[in-house]
Amino acid sequence: SEPTTVYAPSPAPTVERTMEPTSQYAPSPAPSVETTSEPTLDPDCVNSPSWFKKDDPSKHCDWVDELPDPRCSVKGQDGGLAENSCRASCGCPPLPTSEPTTVYAPSPAPTVERTMEPTSQYAPSPAPSVETTSEPTLDPDCVNSPSWFKKDDPSKHCDWVDELPDPRCSVKGQDGGLAENSCRA
Image (cartoon, rainbow, N blue to C red; front, side, top):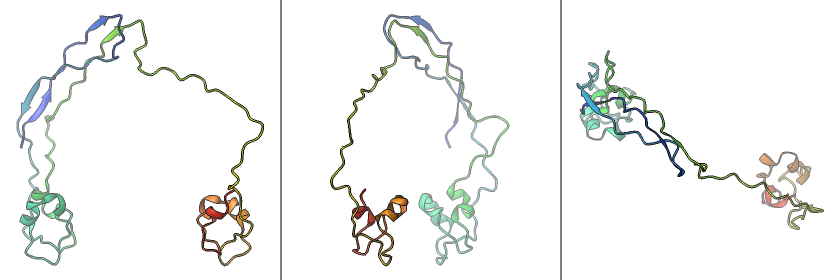
């Protein structure tokens, strides 16, 4: 197991004034690193000597240990997953300790810099132009078929589809085609 990393606080931020556009935040300096002792493992983090793969008693926790990623989700003869019986093979989380194993110090405050120009790379969008037309132009193919009706129910025409288009556009008609192809208005 790798040593645990502890990060110490970074130095104080700097304040500069410049005439050039700059990033709002300056990068944090590299943290200093301390290591602590190895984490303590759960004493129950062991492989069961009685677990084996369902219908294959030759495959025990040692078999799971060879390829834990796919095999920890395999069912055993007892109906439980390997991850619950082969805990050492499938991985156990470290036990909590009174001392934190990893401490992250906050990043320093952002560097404050004054500029004459905005620092954002995005400019506001201009207002949209508005054009009005007298009448909308309709697609000549966007019409309802006068002959379409629901398969086995001649009382349900395109007007019926228009009432609830989301579910009804996928209904088959007497011709075998979907309503969405015949009821286009």
